[in-house]
Length: 436
Image (cartoon, rainbow, N blue to C red):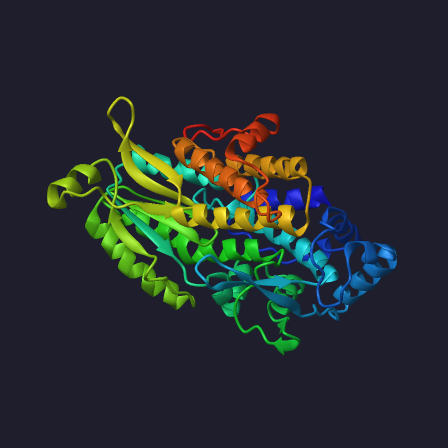
């Protein structure tokens, strides 16, 4: 099966205008079984309450039935269970939880879509793609800011991106490379499956549920046509100065050499987003002066430091290296930092107070969390924020150790001794912004 998908991918790469009319047959029992084997069995269950283990009890019969329904076009996904996940701004983010069988079909569909569309995506797209990650996006952005003629940065945010993807445009975009009715039908019925919220069925007239296995590839296809293709083929060739783009999911930054071109692009961007059913979050989207001359210009005009912007959880700011030359530096954004500290406060309380876990076990868990945190935020120039985070965690641990009973459990001296016996891991930079 992997060989067949690789062949599709090769054909797509070698023939950028090729239309695939017969790829639906790839979603057969062999592929679905492979999807089943790769599926995470610990994920939440959909409205039918079926887990991976449950489905596996009669795997062959279940897959035979599913394949038969797919062939007869009798397969209809069940509504997703919708839950609201709190955000740090007081709002919530909707998360869709799908039934296990629907996840299998989504994964199979994702593999086919990825085989066809992945070869045509530009290097500017970094999110939800094989062999790419957030740190690669940050490196690409850093190159544009430090090595190219960047004087202005457009930091843009799309309002409710996944919730407002237009179903009609999704189908048109998919049909630009795939004309197989089987694939188009699967995309359509998946988008229209609806949701169950508080035991009430709601139709899904727009959007692709966050939690769907297919949503990332559909989001990339959407962003490819709406933003990246337009920028690469229409905007960039006409620019008289440098302009560059980096995209991660719905988060993107655009760099410009000339202010008039930056402003013109910003004005066109709003109209283009609106044409495809999207809109910019005006309060979070802004054009700022940023680059090697921004510091000097800003201080000359108003005596202030140049503005900063946030991308992928890091605040970027103008600075200089040890040699006195211009450098862009980054640190954990206040928003992400405070959110994580708040989460740690609750988690430490639960483990020490609610569940009464042994202190060594709690510290072992803390170290696992810290190492994971360092692997993402442990990037060049961010040492201070890493140390600050560890300090906050240490204080939280001390606080909740002394609230396990009415009596004070630890003096600060005793806590220091505890830390010597069961130390927290030290902050570490894992990622070089100038690495490969």
